[in-house]
Image (tube, rainbow, N blue to C red):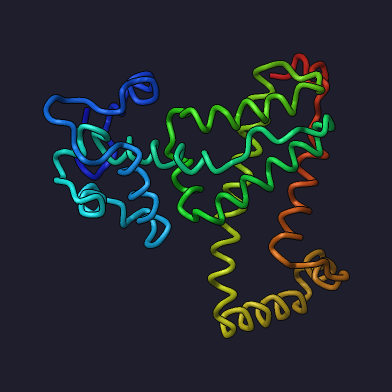
Length: 246
Protein backbone atom coordinates (compact mmCIF):
# COMPACT_ATOMS: atom_id res chain seq x y z
CA UNK A 1 0.00 0.00 0.00
CA UNK A 2 1.18 3.48 -0.81
CA UNK A 3 1.18 6.07 1.91
CA UNK A 4 0.87 9.80 1.40
CA UNK A 5 -1.55 12.43 0.20
CA UNK A 6 -1.35 11.36 -3.43
CA UNK A 7 -3.21 8.42 -4.94
CA UNK A 8 -1.60 5.07 -4.36
CA UNK A 9 -0.43 3.21 -7.46
CA UNK A 10 -1.95 -0.09 -6.44
CA UNK A 11 -4.81 1.07 -4.28
CA UNK A 12 -6.32 -1.25 -1.71
CA UNK A 13 -8.00 -4.62 -1.93
CA UNK A 14 -11.79 -3.93 -2.00
CA UNK A 15 -12.47 -6.97 0.16
CA UNK A 16 -9.99 -5.76 2.72
CA UNK A 17 -11.41 -2.24 2.59
CA UNK A 18 -15.11 -3.03 2.81
CA UNK A 19 -15.27 -6.40 4.54
CA UNK A 20 -12.29 -6.08 6.87
CA UNK A 21 -12.24 -4.75 10.39
CA UNK A 22 -11.70 -1.16 9.32
CA UNK A 23 -8.32 -0.96 10.98
CA UNK A 24 -4.95 -2.55 10.39
CA UNK A 25 -1.94 -2.62 12.67
CA UNK A 26 -1.59 -3.47 16.30
CA UNK A 27 -1.50 -1.63 19.56
CA UNK A 28 -3.94 0.07 21.86
CA UNK A 29 -7.33 0.90 20.40
CA UNK A 30 -7.36 4.64 19.58
CA UNK A 31 -10.02 7.15 20.57
CA UNK A 32 -11.23 7.57 16.99
CA UNK A 33 -12.63 5.32 14.28
CA UNK A 34 -12.54 4.97 10.51
CA UNK A 35 -16.04 6.44 10.42
CA UNK A 36 -14.88 9.50 12.37
CA UNK A 37 -11.91 9.95 10.06
CA UNK A 38 -14.12 9.67 7.00
CA UNK A 39 -16.68 12.11 8.41
CA UNK A 40 -13.90 14.61 9.12
CA UNK A 41 -12.63 14.28 5.56
CA UNK A 42 -16.13 14.79 4.17
CA UNK A 43 -16.60 17.90 6.30
CA UNK A 44 -13.31 19.31 5.00
CA UNK A 45 -14.25 18.61 1.39
CA UNK A 46 -17.72 20.14 1.86
CA UNK A 47 -16.23 23.31 3.30
CA UNK A 48 -13.07 23.76 1.25
CA UNK A 49 -13.07 21.31 -1.66
CA UNK A 50 -11.18 18.09 -2.32
CA UNK A 51 -7.84 19.85 -2.49
CA UNK A 52 -8.17 20.64 1.22
CA UNK A 53 -8.40 16.96 2.11
CA UNK A 54 -4.93 15.84 3.13
CA UNK A 55 -3.97 13.25 5.68
CA UNK A 56 -2.44 15.98 7.83
CA UNK A 57 -5.62 18.12 7.81
CA UNK A 58 -7.84 15.14 8.55
CA UNK A 59 -5.58 14.03 11.39
CA UNK A 60 -5.79 17.50 12.91
CA UNK A 61 -9.59 17.40 12.66
CA UNK A 62 -9.86 14.19 14.67
CA UNK A 63 -6.98 14.97 17.02
CA UNK A 64 -4.77 12.15 15.86
CA UNK A 65 -1.26 11.76 14.60
CA UNK A 66 -0.87 11.54 10.84
CA UNK A 67 0.82 8.15 10.96
CA UNK A 68 -2.02 6.62 12.95
CA UNK A 69 -4.45 7.46 10.13
CA UNK A 70 -2.61 5.10 7.81
CA UNK A 71 -4.02 2.20 9.80
CA UNK A 72 -7.44 3.18 8.47
CA UNK A 73 -6.68 4.77 5.09
CA UNK A 74 -3.22 4.02 3.67
CA UNK A 75 -3.45 6.83 1.11
CA UNK A 76 -5.74 9.58 -0.14
CA UNK A 77 -7.13 7.33 -2.86
CA UNK A 78 -8.50 4.98 -0.22
CA UNK A 79 -9.80 7.91 1.81
CA UNK A 80 -11.74 9.12 -1.24
CA UNK A 81 -13.29 5.67 -1.61
CA UNK A 82 -14.42 5.87 2.01
CA UNK A 83 -15.76 9.40 1.54
CA UNK A 84 -17.82 8.50 -1.54
CA UNK A 85 -19.43 5.55 0.19
CA UNK A 86 -19.97 7.55 3.39
CA UNK A 87 -22.08 10.22 1.66
CA UNK A 88 -23.81 7.56 -0.44
CA UNK A 89 -25.33 6.44 2.84
CA UNK A 90 -27.49 9.58 2.66
CA UNK A 91 -29.35 8.16 -0.35
CA UNK A 92 -32.67 6.48 0.48
CA UNK A 93 -32.81 2.81 -0.48
CA UNK A 94 -35.98 1.49 1.16
CA UNK A 95 -38.73 3.78 -0.16
CA UNK A 96 -41.19 1.79 -2.32
CA UNK A 97 -40.73 1.93 -6.08
CA UNK A 98 -43.63 2.76 -8.40
CA UNK A 99 -43.07 -0.15 -10.77
CA UNK A 100 -42.75 2.25 -13.70
CA UNK A 101 -39.04 1.90 -14.44
CA UNK A 102 -38.72 5.26 -16.20
CA UNK A 103 -40.39 7.10 -13.33
CA UNK A 104 -38.26 5.26 -10.80
CA UNK A 105 -35.03 5.83 -12.72
CA UNK A 106 -35.78 9.56 -13.01
CA UNK A 107 -36.37 9.69 -9.25
CA UNK A 108 -32.99 8.01 -8.75
CA UNK A 109 -31.38 10.64 -10.98
CA UNK A 110 -32.92 13.46 -8.95
CA UNK A 111 -31.69 11.85 -5.72
CA UNK A 112 -28.17 11.63 -7.13
CA UNK A 113 -28.25 15.28 -8.20
CA UNK A 114 -29.42 16.39 -4.75
CA UNK A 115 -26.59 14.43 -3.11
CA UNK A 116 -23.96 15.87 -5.44
CA UNK A 117 -25.19 19.42 -4.91
CA UNK A 118 -24.95 18.83 -1.17
CA UNK A 119 -21.39 17.56 -1.63
CA UNK A 120 -20.00 19.49 -4.63
CA UNK A 121 -16.74 17.54 -4.57
CA UNK A 122 -18.55 14.27 -5.28
CA UNK A 123 -18.66 14.41 -9.12
CA UNK A 124 -14.88 14.68 -9.27
CA UNK A 125 -14.41 11.97 -6.64
CA UNK A 126 -16.67 9.58 -8.54
CA UNK A 127 -14.42 9.72 -11.58
CA UNK A 128 -11.55 8.36 -9.48
CA UNK A 129 -13.54 5.70 -7.63
CA UNK A 130 -12.39 2.13 -8.18
CA UNK A 131 -14.66 0.05 -5.94
CA UNK A 132 -18.21 0.04 -4.62
CA UNK A 133 -18.75 0.24 -0.89
CA UNK A 134 -21.80 -1.07 1.00
CA UNK A 135 -23.86 2.12 0.75
CA UNK A 136 -23.13 2.46 -2.95
CA UNK A 137 -24.05 -1.17 -3.50
CA UNK A 138 -27.36 -0.67 -1.68
CA UNK A 139 -28.26 2.19 -4.01
CA UNK A 140 -27.12 0.19 -7.04
CA UNK A 141 -29.39 -2.63 -5.88
CA UNK A 142 -32.28 -0.16 -5.83
CA UNK A 143 -31.52 0.96 -9.38
CA UNK A 144 -31.31 -2.62 -10.62
CA UNK A 145 -34.62 -3.36 -8.93
CA UNK A 146 -36.15 -0.34 -10.67
CA UNK A 147 -34.93 -1.74 -14.00
CA UNK A 148 -36.39 -5.20 -13.39
CA UNK A 149 -39.53 -4.51 -15.51
CA UNK A 150 -37.34 -3.89 -18.58
CA UNK A 151 -36.10 -6.55 -20.99
CA UNK A 152 -32.48 -5.61 -20.38
CA UNK A 153 -30.00 -8.24 -19.25
CA UNK A 154 -27.85 -7.77 -16.18
CA UNK A 155 -24.89 -6.24 -17.99
CA UNK A 156 -27.11 -3.73 -19.78
CA UNK A 157 -28.76 -2.74 -16.51
CA UNK A 158 -25.36 -2.02 -15.00
CA UNK A 159 -24.50 0.05 -18.07
CA UNK A 160 -27.71 2.06 -17.72
CA UNK A 161 -26.93 2.85 -14.10
CA UNK A 162 -23.37 3.85 -15.01
CA UNK A 163 -24.70 6.04 -17.83
CA UNK A 164 -27.19 7.70 -15.52
CA UNK A 165 -24.61 8.34 -12.80
CA UNK A 166 -22.13 9.70 -15.32
CA UNK A 167 -24.74 12.03 -16.78
CA UNK A 168 -25.77 13.35 -13.36
CA UNK A 169 -22.15 13.88 -12.28
CA UNK A 170 -21.27 15.76 -15.48
CA UNK A 171 -24.44 17.85 -15.31
CA UNK A 172 -23.93 18.79 -11.67
CA UNK A 173 -20.30 19.73 -12.27
CA UNK A 174 -21.46 22.00 -15.11
CA UNK A 175 -24.33 23.32 -13.00
CA UNK A 176 -21.98 24.28 -10.18
CA UNK A 177 -19.61 26.01 -12.61
CA UNK A 178 -22.48 27.88 -14.25
CA UNK A 179 -23.79 28.94 -10.87
CA UNK A 180 -20.42 30.44 -10.02
CA UNK A 181 -20.36 32.28 -13.35
CA UNK A 182 -23.89 33.58 -12.85
CA UNK A 183 -22.78 35.26 -9.66
CA UNK A 184 -20.75 37.56 -11.88
CA UNK A 185 -23.37 39.70 -13.69
CA UNK A 186 -20.75 41.45 -15.81
CA UNK A 187 -19.51 38.14 -17.18
CA UNK A 188 -23.06 36.93 -17.91
CA UNK A 189 -23.90 40.17 -19.74
CA UNK A 190 -20.70 39.97 -21.79
CA UNK A 191 -21.51 36.40 -22.80
CA UNK A 192 -25.03 37.44 -23.88
CA UNK A 193 -23.66 40.31 -25.99
CA UNK A 194 -21.15 37.98 -27.61
CA UNK A 195 -23.77 35.40 -28.59
CA UNK A 196 -26.06 38.12 -29.94
CA UNK A 197 -23.23 39.42 -32.12
CA UNK A 198 -22.40 35.93 -33.40
CA UNK A 199 -26.06 35.21 -34.17
CA UNK A 200 -26.30 38.44 -36.19
CA UNK A 201 -23.17 37.92 -38.29
CA UNK A 202 -24.93 35.80 -40.92
CA UNK A 203 -22.48 32.90 -40.61
CA UNK A 204 -24.40 30.95 -37.99
CA UNK A 205 -28.03 30.74 -39.21
CA UNK A 206 -28.87 27.63 -37.18
CA UNK A 207 -27.59 29.24 -34.01
CA UNK A 208 -29.49 32.44 -34.77
CA UNK A 209 -32.70 30.46 -35.23
CA UNK A 210 -32.12 28.52 -32.02
CA UNK A 211 -31.48 31.68 -30.01
CA UNK A 212 -34.60 33.32 -31.45
CA UNK A 213 -36.82 30.42 -30.39
CA UNK A 214 -39.10 30.89 -27.36
CA UNK A 215 -37.22 30.36 -24.16
CA UNK A 216 -37.82 27.56 -21.68
CA UNK A 217 -37.59 27.68 -17.90
CA UNK A 218 -33.92 28.08 -17.06
CA UNK A 219 -33.98 27.24 -13.38
CA UNK A 220 -31.38 24.58 -12.56
CA UNK A 221 -34.08 22.11 -11.50
CA UNK A 222 -36.13 22.61 -14.69
CA UNK A 223 -33.07 22.31 -16.92
CA UNK A 224 -31.90 19.13 -15.20
CA UNK A 225 -35.37 17.61 -15.44
CA UNK A 226 -35.57 18.26 -19.20
CA UNK A 227 -32.16 16.70 -19.81
CA UNK A 228 -32.91 13.74 -17.56
CA UNK A 229 -36.25 13.13 -19.26
CA UNK A 230 -34.58 13.07 -22.67
CA UNK A 231 -31.98 10.59 -21.43
CA UNK A 232 -34.38 8.19 -19.72
CA UNK A 233 -37.22 8.43 -22.24
CA UNK A 234 -34.76 7.73 -25.06
CA UNK A 235 -33.30 4.57 -23.55
CA UNK A 236 -33.74 1.50 -25.73
CA UNK A 237 -34.69 -1.49 -23.60
CA UNK A 238 -35.10 -3.94 -26.47
CA UNK A 239 -32.19 -6.39 -26.05
CA UNK A 240 -32.40 -7.37 -29.72
CA UNK A 241 -32.38 -3.86 -31.15
CA UNK A 242 -28.60 -3.70 -31.48
CA UNK A 243 -27.95 -7.39 -32.04
CA UNK A 244 -25.00 -7.92 -34.32
CA UNK A 245 -23.70 -4.37 -33.92
CA UNK A 246 -19.91 -4.22 -33.93
